[in-house]
Length: 240
Image: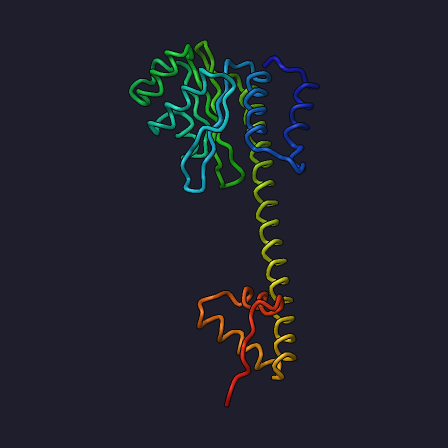
């Protein structure tokens, strides 16, 4: 491992800073790929992230060669990241030339690109695995324990950042939905009062009239209420 303690601290501080309005997950993971190559002393890094269907997709790579190798992995559903994602455990191969039977297409692409060993680290938080990080080396041999530990820590820090952002996004959606519901409720109450006053009926009767009209015309009650308040719709006073 070639990184200084100071540089490692700087990178972790940067990866933890996801509380920004313009947070961009792709840029975030591009930085992670570059930092992994820098701090861990590997030749290249690729990152795969699962979509909402659970399928891995290439989201970042520190070099064009690594990107092409990772695309081969995704397209053929074979490779160390796939295994790390499925099992939630690291996968290390000291000599990729010995893994041709295990991952024939991935291994061929990786060796052709000049990579001879690989370490895949799961991006996980407790039992949830979001993706995996691939560390490529142009030489054979296993990474030392300290390097693997730091690599996993970087992957974990990125995972926490992604999970945090997803939680914020869900909270924003819930908040927006709640506000929309409150606005709709206010609009309906206004329409009830407007209709009750304009055709001289009770508030409950006005609401029943609005609801009946909405159902009969296959319209949302909120839209009907808005039309009434904006004087775009006039409902007749019920007879009988």
